[in-house]
Length: 114
Image 1 (cartoon, rainbow, N blue to C red):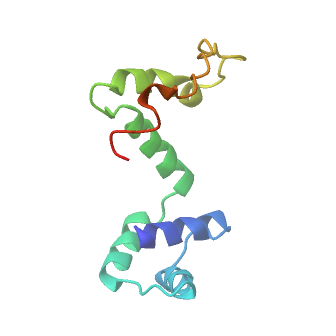
Image 2 (cartoon, rainbow, N blue to C red; image 1 turned 180 degrees about the vertical axis):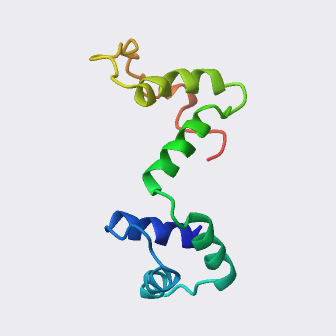
């Protein structure tokens, strides 16, 4: 993951095809040693590919992945406007909860765990 993050940072910085040496320099600047085997595999996998196209392709694949258990349906519906385009101008706010009443003196200052 650290190798990919350094590769993407170089891509954001304008280096369209970072080399293994470039990635090692980024990682060493923050005190991280690069794993040569993993780095070489990453470089060969991404060689000649456009990062923006890969990110767009990956995002479309992630959109179809279920994400959660019982609450998954509600989360997917809530995230749809952000991924799909324009969000509604104003979202309905839930009714304001009544302010919680201050603790009463019914327990005379003694609590269960005091």
